[in-house]
Image (tube, rainbow, N blue to C red; front, side, top):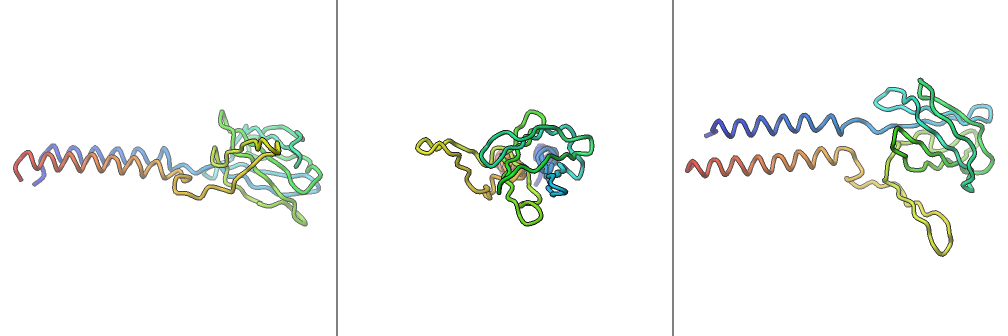
Length: 174
């Protein structure tokens, strides 16, 4: 049956899996956009809490700088909406720069109205022949989820732990 060593391995694996989950299970930040009186208003939130001091840079659809600022303690901010059909928004949270957000004007607002802020999922590269910027669509692979790391860590722990249990049982001749 179970040896004391096997029980220790199982308890250790359970503790490691519980400790690994909160570190990666935190929700990615989200930003919501509204248009009011010619101004684009935004609110940055993470885990239902406002994100203060997020640096925001706004560019015209041609890529020219338009506005720059930070969110307040309430995670909110705003800027005059530049002309054109699209607006580009860049967020910097701490030392991490988020993927560029492209907003498209609609009749009375912008789309998308809410965006999951991602980091490194939409890499851009210069297209040498045209000099333009290529932006692939959103990554929807399992690796794009923050839970991927938790599952990988837990799977590895369970694999190693299960192997140790099997070896311990074989060593006892059971």
